[in-house]
Length: 163
Image 1 (tube, rainbow, N blue to C red):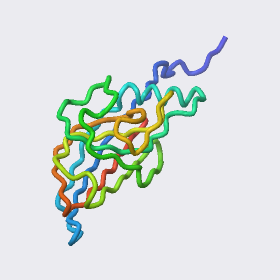
Image 2 (image 1 turned 30 degrees about the vertical axis):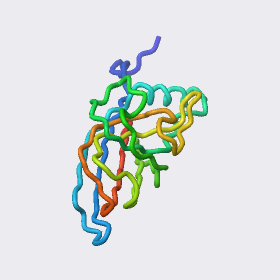
Image 3 (image 1 turned 90 degrees about the vertical axis):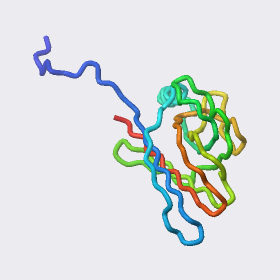
């Protein structure tokens, strides 16, 4: 009979939370025009991809960031952006103490317009993200409200915390 500590956590749950930091800069001066930090939703398909990765499948890698003009609120069942406008390979990825960070830099000629949504995409079972809109597995999505012009650069920094 085991007589150890009976105060065990029997239902420890892993929760994924995320934030998106949006920085718009004047390309000519480098001056920051706006910075916003917005919560994002880690959707069901993204959670499934992580579970599949844990089971040994070659999926679950986040590789692309996308922007769109759709205004529909994020939902757990999302499979894509509502109206994708621009997509770019993630510039840098890092990890430290349960936090994964994904940064994408959009130049003056990329992602211009009225931006209302953003998402991260990658590999899923039978899905591989590429530079083509609508490809790959969606992991997380959020609504944003920013306008970017050809005078601006845009940096999106996603932080996903597993805890």
